[in-house]
Image (cartoon, rainbow, N blue to C red; front, side):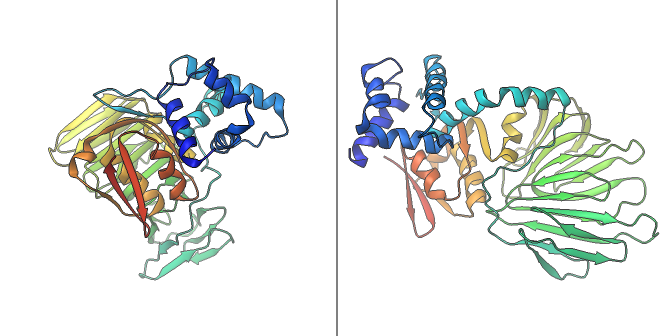
Length: 383
């Protein structure tokens, strides 16, 4: 079967023209001529089951069950459903991981780990108090000493180890995570900070005084150590967030239209455009930098925190914003052949891969758009 023929079959599946139970579907499952498509599915799912047919059969049954409930590509005039092979993986991973997720939520251990796929090939830079720039090695442990204690790196994490016995003035550092990378930071009070691509965070090596304050540009997921006597404050250019002990996500990229604070657990107060909002879990404060309007609303927090697990769930997201995310993931510039393409809305799930080519190959299965990769640049056009 040629690549073009495989693409036609895949497109028919994504459009719902081929469904579980159809004769064509049984051909795909059982005919060796379709082995290329079956291998693609297994690869996207991330399972290597060629010699474990019992588990492979169970996987097919789960996928079919999900598709029969209507989880397939549907196009309407209002939006596109972007359900490519990563969504097949989502169906299987969700079913396999349900017991794990139940324990995770039951214990409220809202402290995720990064995905197993590592994109951290760019250099993580720590700017010292005197302006010196140190490159943090993601593989080997490094120890950085100062008069207040020190810091060490371990498994893409910078851990601040302050000597609280010394009454010294705090020293301020800046952690610079470039596009195409991700990193973690454990502050001196035990607060865990997960930093997304293209993020800069300024912090002290020890907290003194009434407040614990850091400054963020980009996106971070924070698990704040509880200390009722010392509020934790995150400063961005447009929004100030104050917490006592909680789990939340802040998206404040300087090139983005929105600054979004999404609360997962606990209670925070946001100060934005002369408005103070005390947030409840499962809500978001979204500040529109252009209109300067502040919107406080309930949201599905997973849509705004899924990035820490190596994929991105989204609903009714404009393509322009979605491509900003992908551009940061892979540190690759993206152009639009016409500005109106940025307004097309998508819903679905995208997973991080080692190469951008894999992602854009799958995106190319959508009917409406083509994604042309030339010389490490992507151009989006209508088909």
